[in-house]
Amino acid sequence: MKTFHTIAELRTALKSERLQDKRIAFVPTMGNLHEGHMDLVRRARQEGDVVVASIFVNPMQFSANEDLERYPRTLTEDQALLESNTCDYLFAPSALEMYPDGKRSQTQIEVTGLSDILCGATRPGHFVGVATVVTKLFNIVMPDCAIFGNKDFQQLKVIEDMARDLSSNVEVIGVNIARADSGLAMSSRNGYLSAEELSIAPTIYQTLLWAKQSILEGHVSYANICEQALQKLEAVGFERDYFEIRAQHDLLTPSEKEKQLVILVAAYLGKARLIDNITVELP
Ligand code: PAF
Image: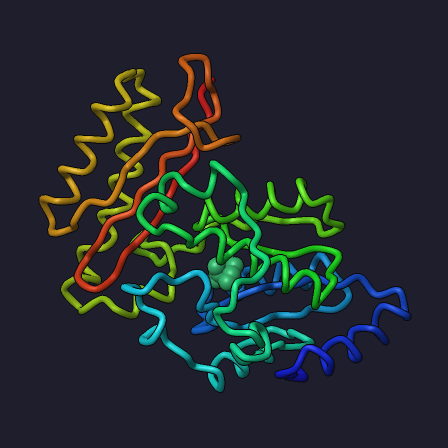
């Protein structure tokens, strides 16, 4: 696997692949890679002739009070993991390479509406940072397809809408959530959890399963289910952010007729803000 730190070097390498008509599959990440990311790389291997991953802890998607500085940076370990999963190219730029003008006002990409709800309400500006950096990465890599995890359900929706609205040529593909045996969704932020918190954290998935079962059993007060779910989480030590039942296609409050639902949760445990989700298909 070749690692490039500059846009120019990566473009040169990918140009020659493209001239040979190779299909390029891209996996954007912020590093500190785990098995969930490797699922994305394995899917990319199935989708493309050439697999490109990126590692960039994007300052634009963190607000001032968030974990940008302490976000784990593990480039050497990540390179070994990518190499053993047959990734061809790694793009690992500096912040200066990606944002040469720093914080000077710059072009931003915003999927309006969708960016302000759920995680966007708690993390203002986050999805503008995500959509902007993903657009830049798409322009740099020019992939045929790009692979993202379903754990960030709202992020995936923002990227799908952004790609569609900007007439992007990139096919956006979502991959199922990778879970530990305990049910806990894999996440780089799980590394912030103490041993005790790690034993509590799977409650988040158990609560999603409970809520899904309640919906399937015909409980129609979604507000009630969500409030009970938050109380279950608080009872074991989580602090609430949100627990919501939404329509899969636009993430808005579902109408009574809506059959394709998604339950989304964000909650704090110690220093970590954990997110997870589960889809529900009503008959
Ligand atoms: O999901 C992530 O790791 C990041 O939000 C992404 C998509 C790589 C953009 O920085």
